[in-house]
Length: 522
Image (cartoon, rainbow, N blue to C red; front, side):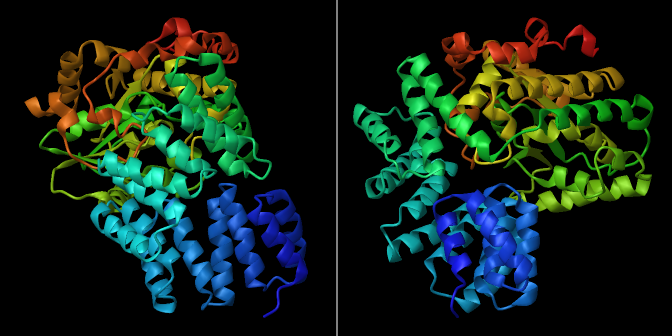
């Protein structure tokens, strides 16, 4: 079947990451021919690149309604579902994909990534190795293989896989950032020269460019060259923000509404699932949540999972949050709690009675957690606002943290987070246990004992040797938590202080009040 010239141009624009041009071509085309499944699939890919994953899912399902045998759309839908936190559904779709096209290496790679999302890391590694034995010179597959090796703690093998990918394509920015994101690799002069050469290329795609900017920021950070490091971080964040803008007003409104709705009387009503299984670790990213998770998962009764997408899905699945939560009956609240437990169960690998969900962004749903799982534990991981926010500005997140691309947005986000947690402290004193990162670093055993007491767990010596615990860790701190606690990170932000005016302005009284909330929040 011949391609319409507009689709040829749209495909070229997508390949060059010129998404605005692709959209201007695809939408009129679909107005004329709404049943062109190839155009629908391309528009779905565009939506996915912009982070509009639900829109992408709707489009791909529409394509499959028109043509149930469109294997490419089925494979794309599996990828989108995986990114939406629904890997079980993705895995089911992949059965049909493999039946139709059993020899496509790309499908094997997608299945391996999906198995990784489900926590089946060993089978995922076997699939990656199978792919690489058939097609050894694929830098993106090598990169994905490196990610999985990092997750299971095989650091040396992970570095080797990343280096192999760079040798094939030194302009593949995500591989450079993957090396930087290990936190334990220091770039050589040759590495810096190679990255600077990549940035100098006129044909470098934006996706590669911002990854390289973040990696070079890390390279100069390690050398103590703060001004140069900040320039690269700022450039990477500016470019990233063009594709993922953040509306700070929307979050402020959500917090305002939550504080208005979730009164002490409402939050203490009977209802919800009585299960005590989940331990939620919430707060800002880069505030020590992975450290807390590693400590707790070193206890014989606690299983560490990952940053689970399930609580936001359960809360938003009942209407416009937070207003929708207020009208839930006792039975509906119980059903919501049970739905969360059922969804999160796919990540469980042991029969330990407690498990950890460490999605930091769950702080916005802390009142809802109390509403549907009143016996769950909630731990707030808090870190100095300048240290925490600058660490976020330096960290390129794959997705889901759009507020980190601007210092002003970061300051507002931190303030809104503290504001909602202060409200919870007021209406339900002691319900949320706070772990202040600097106190954990200064007096680890005292803080760990208080943490265990809150969770109702007996002290075990293994929790003090958390860095020896062998488990998969899927966050940017994966290698740091495999080492004893170190103190030098607490003051790293000072190297960037001349550049932090917008952040300080947005934080306002938060700086002086830390680690408490400002008086006006109480």
